[in-house]
Every structure is written in structure tokens, then in C-alpha cells.
Image 1: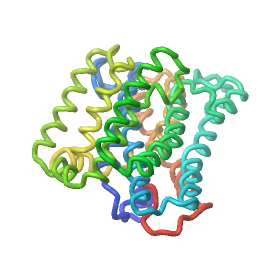
Image 2: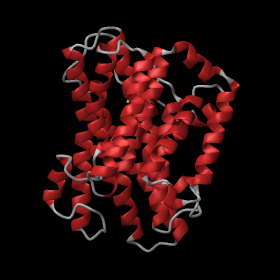
Image 3: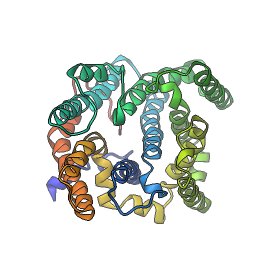
Image 4: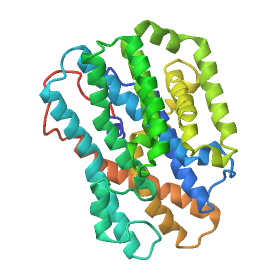
Length: 355
């Protein structure tokens, strides 16, 4: 159907890898299922990986860093990262995040005013969130991720201009930054919305992008070896076993292990097989395509459904169906039109960021 294809605008892009849509879909489902479980909805036990919302957000961070940085590295390699590209890059990031973010904040504020138990109690809090000064409940990840969009180009510029993509210098730099940022946040204890807390998660996504762009032989070996599939399934198994210890995946000391496992699952998606086929399943890809809208709007839907005191099975199905419906509407009428709007168009072909 033509209207259904509107949810998959990147399918014709030669650099688009369809299983990554499914991986993004898995990430947001962990969040949606997790919040449902917190309110007594869903068939999953308290120890299932499918209710670990924070692990889903960590997967988002790894994916975002990989998808954006592989494009930035490509532009640097081709000496096409001029001012027109950076205007395009910044405008795309702003249009990708803030209009939908603002709409979600308004919805939360109105939902709160109507009596639903959601965050954003005052209009002043809307502006504080938009200024990235606070991040209540699900909104904590927005300032964290957006700030990395600003850090990443600077880091890659250094790798390009100063290190000339020297692998040893890059690896040493990444290790130094990882250790340094870890020690720094333990000493300084910055706000929870500081990107420094989660910098190592993003950097592992960046590392995957660097391997793909700078070490094509190694990337080919990693993505074509049958052992990659084994490591991918092993990563999911470890994540599943880890989820039985609910208190053990939100501590800063676990960020690198969790992001490493997701990075392995990301690389494994490039190897043809069952894992890639599952991630290429169109319903899961659809969830991935609308994941940002789903992430932002599922909580008001959940609290509205809970306000009716329905039987748990009906409430669970209503929550999923209404979340999908609201998500589809916001994607088609807000998110997708903004993706098509390009105030600064970079003139070279193939420059479109895929996230």
C-alpha cells in the first residue's frame, strides 16, 4: 500500500540497512512494555528483558551514535563537510527533536491538568525541558542525546584533522575519554541529564561507525563471519540473564557492558540469518520507524487507559492499540512532514542522515 510506504521513506536509500529499523523497534518496545509492566499490564514477568526500558534507551543511544557518526565520518573522508553540511546537520537535528518534543510536553501538561498522573505540572516546566535544563521521567533522554549530537562532530573533527584517522591514536583517545569521563562523573556527580553519565554508551556506537568506515576489511570480516551470529545471540542471552537482576543495569559501572552487548547485536544484524530476518520483520520495522513518536506519547495513553480500571488483559491490548494509533497519527502529520522540510539543503547527493 502506498500509504504504508510513507512509514519507510529510507528504504530506497542505498545506505539504509533495514534490520536497524527493527533494532530501533526493539528498543522502544522495551520502554513501552516496561512502563506497562510498572503499572501491572502485560504478560511479561518481572525479570524479562522485554520490560527493561533503560536497556532499551541504551540501545537507542548506541544506534543514534552509530547512524549519525557513520554519516559524519563519510563526509569528512570525502572532504564534503563544509558549512552547508553543518547547517543542514544542525537544522535536521533540531527539526527531528524539538517540534515533536514540544508537542509531547504540551500533551503531558494538558494531561496533567486533566487529572492524569504524568509529569509536567506547570507551563514553566515545558520551557525548562525545551531549554534542556531538566528531563523528568521519559524526557531525561532528550537532553542527554541532543548534547551528544553537538559533541560528536567535534570529536570526529579532531580524529580527522589532528589524527588523520590514525587507528592507534583514535583507540587511545577513545579509551582515555571513556576512563576519564567515568572517573569525572563519579567525582563531580553532574545532573542526571548530563551526557557525561552516558558518554561511554554513545562512544561505543561511534566506535562501530569508525570500524565500518575506516577498517572496511575488518568490518567485512565481522559482518560476514558465521561467528558473528553466535556472538549476537550470545549477547541477547547475556542481556536476558542480566535482566533477572533488575538493580544491576542502571549503575554507571554497567553502562559499558550493556552498550557493548548492544553493539554486538548491532553488528550481528548485518549478517544474513535469523537475527537479521527477525529485525527485518515489517511490523517490527514499523515500530522502529515511528519509535520517537511512540517513545514520547505512550505514557499519556497508558495513564488514560489505567484511569478506566479495565480488566488487565483488555487494558493491556487497549494500551498497545491506542499507542500504535496515536503514534501513527503523530508520525504522519507531524514527524514525517518535518523530515521532508529542509531549510538548509546540502547540495551533494548521498548526504542525508539516516536517523
